[in-house]
Structures are given as structure tokens and as C-alpha cells.
Image (cartoon, rainbow, N blue to C red; front, side, top):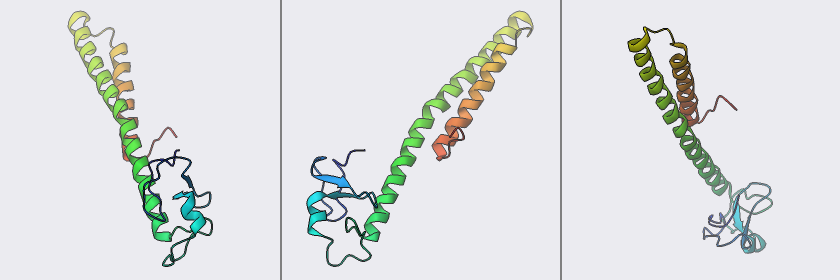
Length: 135
């Protein structure tokens, strides 16, 4: 993960490049290297022993990371749900066509499509909720 583009938890300024900042190896907070060298602000309560970030700033950073992860999970689940819906629709269409043409003798293939589609919908829905059953 790149620190460029993040906000320094000490000075609250934008970190322009990876050479300007780093993630604290103790609390994972993004910080300017120059801010760490200067030390924590005097009003900091319970600072990280490595970078000087306040507990409040560290918690805010954790919440931000959790929100980003949840957004990624929702985005990852959408294609699976869509693909599942397509397979269910194809299976239902195939089932109707086979029943009309052959009286339902070859229903296994559409049934498999529907079952796989339902599985994809369920997995994608779980990813979008943030709990992937496949992991």
C-alpha cells in the first residue's frame, strides 16, 4: 500500500509522495517522516511510542481503513450477484424452452445453471455484507 495521497495523522496535511511519508510500523498510521522526527504535538494524549500519533488519530485511521475495506467488499460482490442473476435467467429461459420443445426430458442443464446462479448470488451478497463465506 502506498502512503502517497494519505493524510498525515500528526499535521493533518496531504502526503505528496512515498519518499515524504511512511506508515508507522507500530500503529500503521500514515505520517510525514519530518513530522515523526519533530515529535508528537504537545497536546497529544497517549501517543504511539514510535510515531507520536494520538490514540484518537489512530482510531480514526482504523475506521477509515475499515470503511475502505467494506467498500472493496461491496464492489467485489456486485459482479458475482449480476453473474448469478444472468445464470438464473438463462436457466429459467432454457427450462421453459426445453419444456415447450421436448416435454422436459433435458431439464438437468437448466437446473444446474439455476443452482450455480443462486450460489453466485448468495456468495456475492455475503461479500457485499462484508463476510465472504469462501475465506
